[in-house]
Length: 567
Image (cartoon, rainbow, N blue to C red; front, top):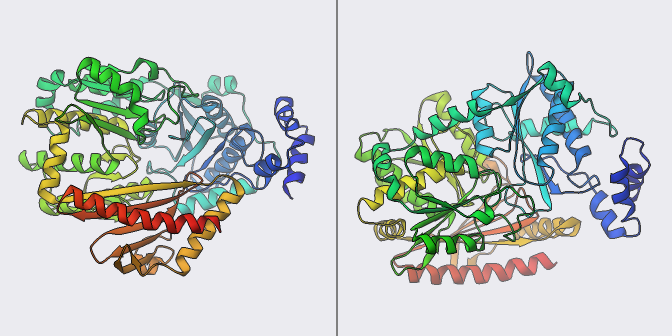
């Protein structure tokens, strides 16, 4: 069917409610909008569903959520021996609580035992709960750090990480087999009464807090000196407000000032353009609070609390908003230093990073004799390494990170964990304060020790059908004719991650160039947003030299991609 035929199917179906039909009636004379909403179905990938809220096949709505859950239920009943068990969490976005309940009702109708959080909870807590309650799958309703018009539906596997590609493909097949708008459905009150939906309370939170706190490397010092740390925290209207404050209080970091305007959950995210701790503008209000209370560090979490941003005060009194790579480097160095100082550094320690994250991590790990392993972008690949460590006992997982502000230690959760990261940042502040240093001083010391590693990222946002095609065409053109030199430097290695036999990693739509001076360039479409992403990294003896090199590389690659995206 074409877009117009799909539109008429929704308009004429007796199973579509009148409010949804009224929304669609309002666009009857807008062929472009009809095309955007109906030219395709919202794709279920390894990250689940993500899209703009609204009526239509290519939008996030109750009908698509029910359909996805119907497919998931069929998959679980066919693949799990015994009664499947699924836990569900949701964040502060519009319709998140509704989508969570609707998912629970569809699963319950299929005989699945559902564990539903009674209040909004974070991605890492959902990941943790899958393992804690021995579930076969998990669902979290979130669109992470996207603008307010988006929401999403993430599916997790029994290991606590996001569904693997083969599982996602099998779930997709089950979803595609669902016909029409009707799904199995047990009313919520009935499911609560008969126990097929059980609400998760504070008892699971307590286990999460207790286990996460064991990841502190110097708990006695933090308990004694944590009250002296002046810290400002913003949850950016999301799910981190309760757990981040609670875990900081428990470890002894009690002098925490919360940005009041961004404290309450609010799906409109009225104080920011996008609730993204990667964006320095997200800290605008926090800077005012920090100056008022003379704080030395600011932390912020996104709506589902899997990403952590951080700003630190410099020696001259100004603020530096750290990149995800810089936060990762500080945490790796702090953890490994403390483990070594306390005799807890394992001989088979492992740190994992994504292919687009800083190679400064490699240098730090080499100094401490810790293995650094590289995986594809997507935290589930880090999760797979944790599971492999547990299965083979060949390595001890210590830390994993992505440049996109995702961090995880220990492995009690299997997705990036901003709650745990907030705790570790606070501990690092306390440890360095004992040496008379701030986090900015620590970062400077790391650069002086290992050299100046810097990275830049640029995203090209192209929404809609035309945008998707432009991104696809640009990747094809770059793959057919990769540059032999960039900014006057020879390309010594071109890696096409569509060829796993060459990279040793799973197939992925990624290109990476390595230059003769060690600089690297990676281009990939985002897996969760309508974006093409350009990553560049370089290394030099001074900050000025590496910044100059990054600018040269970025200017040339930006010009190249801008041309390709217009064709």
